[in-house]
Length: 351
Ligand SMILES: Cc1ncc(COP(=O)(O)O)c(C=O)c1O
View 1 (tube, helix red, strand yellow):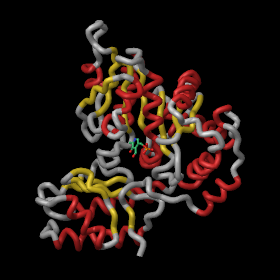
View 2 (cartoon, protein in one colour):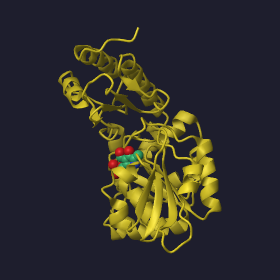
View 3 (tube, protein in one colour):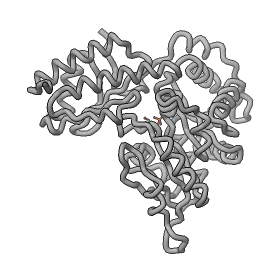
View 4 (spheres, helix red, strand yellow):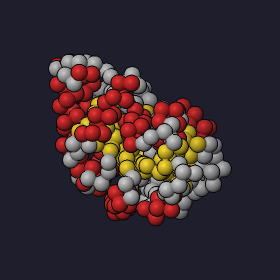
């Protein structure tokens, strides 16, 4: 039997309908701006966000790193949250590609506040790095897919605008925040200077992200994308998958959220397992088994033996992510496996 793969929402394969769209896509040389499918995707995402322009890029990492490069100069400082993707999982890109230093602030469920940012901004003095950019992550991967509260975002946006700082949103999963909250993508777009959204996660496209912002920002990003080897020529076959994904797989993210919640509730029923139910708002759930005295790596092996794949996010934190290829029946099966594995590990249900 095919394993139930809950390691990440990046594991999905293109559906037959998506493959048809890819096969039929019109293409051209995108470095010359002549790929009709890429142009259509970029226009579509820019319009959804209410932003001037957008750029198709190979990955969420490239979108974030381009944003950092375009909003800063070497020697600048970038304020971010300490568990953010751009700080932890992008290979030291900010230092290597943009010559900037990151200033990670401690967050609550991935959220940093306008007050924290205000306190971290460097005074204008040649001894200090120049603070030029703030990055927020929405939804937040390491914080169980928590949504960045809109009012907090508004406060940060007001602060960055008043103080001539730029605000970038790592919106790899902004689609999920939009579906979970009902807040329009353009309302998010109105608050930030740039946003990067992934097509290859919950939406189920095989490759790609879209970076959006002002026309001047995107013109600059286009240049660095080329410099970094990201000019992909007839990549319209990929963009066509992205368009199909937005048209057909966006609303269904609500199902992923409902299923992740069922999994989270299952883990939370066991004594010693800590699940932040308030943070579990979208398609990611994290169970901390430290208090139960368990090691995630052992649980990952046991779950795999029963046909369920998940990730040891840390020695005591287990991550499961729902997506396009996970059905209600898969969740039923996973719930049975969780019961079996945790009971065998000596845990019991809370009365
Ligand atoms: C929040 C967040 N940002 C950015 C990325 C990077 O995306 P990619 O894997 O396409 O580089 C990820 C990937 O998991 C992510 O979770």
